[in-house]
Amino acid sequence: MILSGDKMKQIIKYSLITLLLVALVFCAGCESLGVTYTPEETPTPIPTRTPLPTTIPTQKITPIPTETEEIPLEETPTIEITEEPTELITPEPTPELKPNTTVSNIYIQYSDSDFSVDYPDNWKIKVSVIPTPDNPLIIGSRLKPDSRMVKFGNSNLVNFTVITSDFVTEGNNPFDPSISNIGVGITNQFKDVSGQSTISNYQKKYTTQYQSPYVIYDVTIPKTSKSYPYAYTELDLASSTHFYTVRFNTEGNLEDYRDMKYQMFSSFFAKERG
Image 1 (cartoon, one colour):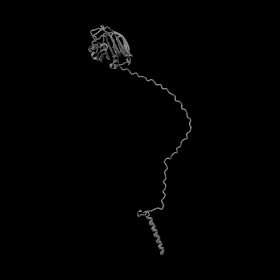
Image 2 (cartoon, one colour):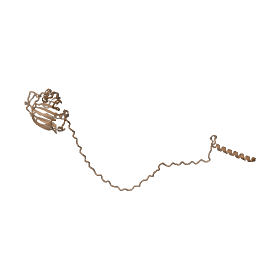
Image 3 (cartoon, one colour):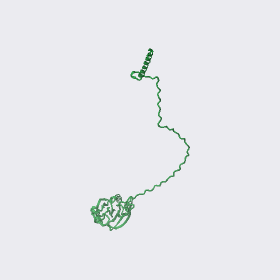
Image 4 (spheres, helix red, strand yellow):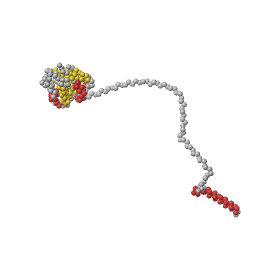
């Protein structure tokens, strides 16, 4: 079929228009060509959905106060607590201090016509007359045959004795309290010991009032003797009228009775007979 010239022109015209539109659409997204597409209307943004809370808040409910009846409390009874007495524990006596030789801390004074002394108030006193002991400390003089002995204590284990002897002639009687003479007297009493070897803490002094000489010393019997254990502190004093032999005796350690010995010996007072 042969088209007419006018018909042919229309076909070509529409073809060109179609190609032009296709070219415009293709180049609309190409920024490299400098073509920018501007939409006619700005699109309305879609609102973002707010997420629901993970916890559901609870509604605070204020309770309605109700009237309650006040119930009186019962009075709590007072309980009296009686304190139980504390039982005192008596310590066991040491081997040197047997139950019947317990020493008190309270001292009272003993006094007679010969002497005075402080002694524990729980000790007993025994007064007797004995034959006058031989004593090598008195030289060239003679003592009367009988002497007075006062014993303080509760047994033969721990005690304090005072022997008072009278001089036949009153005045300045010879008195020699040397260590050698004391040793002789100890050996005479304990045949199986050397007297001087048992003596310690020897002291020679004079009384304050009459300046009468006296000695004080310790004697400890050794283990080799059949009289062991035995120890004593002795004071020998010669006045113008009397001769005193004062002893603190113990079957133990003299150091255990240091305070008591000091109290008794320091309070001892020899009386002159007119």
